[in-house]
Length: 460
Image 1 (cartoon, one colour):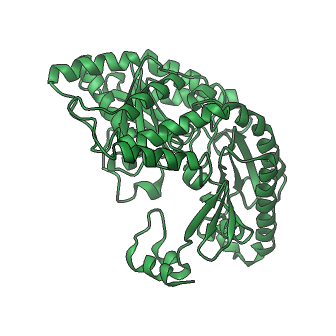
Image 2 (cartoon, one colour):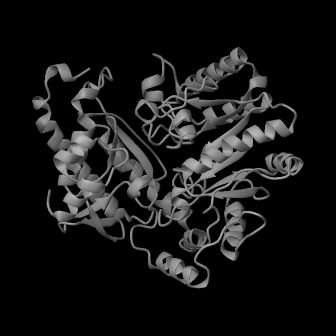
Image 3 (cartoon, helix red, strand yellow):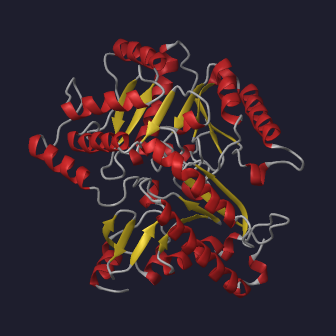
């Protein structure tokens, strides 16, 4: 531990998604300043932040326009709510601009404070929608193994990652799990991507048949599965899946919390992968992570039924105190204005081939089994044996070792098991991408030198 601030952290802060024993042994990494795509810790060490904080800091870490937007809004109206017919100018303009960017410009936006809350909102609205259509028995939700949909009880229950579920998931038999579209680990011998997608969609069809379509409200899916390993689906997967669900009257909910706002080269991941959802959840890059905000976007068709059913009941009995907060809305609105002014999509599309080439070059590294990317999000998957795709044993902690070595080389990334996620701020330059991948390769080479220290029984 480097200073009294670290000791105070250990004394009083309970860290999410952290091994408490490791935290006590190593101390916290305290980030004090940001400058573009770089951050500086409390000891003065500077890092290239290759994960956009938690997938969200699209505009980097010190955008002055967002600071001014927050200060000016606090000066005018520091807080208010959107219950009981109340509203404010910032949230009104934000909703209009947000929906104009979305694939449902004639729909509605219901605001929240996080992606987890936005996901919860979509599920509740799906239930309300089916109730309004005279099918209240449609309650089951299809999710996918390795999915991540938030840290609320419902979000954990929908998630397909063991560490996220654990003691936190509700024991709900109404949440069903399909297989993730991870071609590298999931494809059968000799199966191409088209055949793999066909098989996965057929398995969802079998699941629907077994459960009864009339019992299923919705399927929720991330266009690119983030925390589950940056899983990029085959091109035909989502169009075929959407068609299947539509034929059975099952809503398709797109969790765009990571993919939204240019990350994949379109405004939303559903546009990149060719499907139109019935609802979408957004957060993170909506404010570039500068303020806690999320939203659920409803298609006009879903809203029409929800509106009628809520009016029949006398109220839409859902909401959060800070939903549509004027300050968070003002910052998100300014964020969207900046995206359009810098022509964010063109920027991402220009850099995407450079990013993809860097990741592709790592595919030849002796520790890398698979390297994948879309837009400015990607991953390398570490394996013990490239020829057989044999993974390291989880107990070896190889991914975590690489992340520690990357820190030593001035690079912040995130390991998802032995998959290394790469998700830089969207303002990154080509020269800064060179720095990022040079440092990552240096960490990989350093890890290669240390691999003999991993006991044989720690490889799977």
